[in-house]
Length: 112
Image 1 (spheres, rainbow, N blue to C red):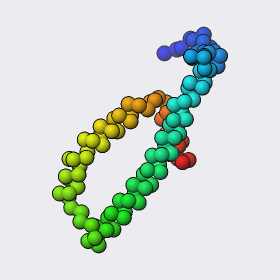
Image 2 (cartoon, rainbow, N blue to C red):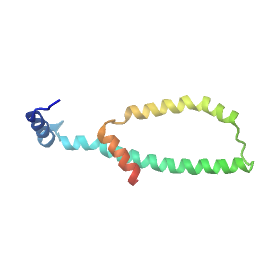
Image 3 (spheres, rainbow, N blue to C red):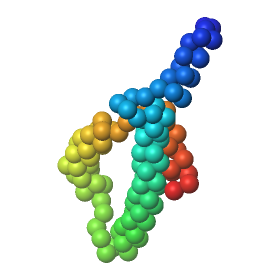
Image 4 (tube, rainbow, N blue to C red):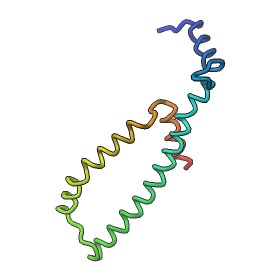
């Protein structure tokens, strides 16, 4: 598929010279990227703390201080699993998904 050169010029002109609700188009396009950077940074920090908590719980379970069984884990999964999925879908529904957001999440996660 060949895109006509005039279409590319029109698109580039809209991005560099156009406005949306009085704001330059580049500002509107940068918002999902910035939100993605913040989300990527927070995901990295959350994963770091979650891994530390899991290691501590496994050590406590190994020494018998905290009881951990597959039955208990299964009960937790059936009790809190649907609630966690509901909250995750709510958060995903709020986020501005797009290429800029995804690139921001990746960069925020790597450099966070």
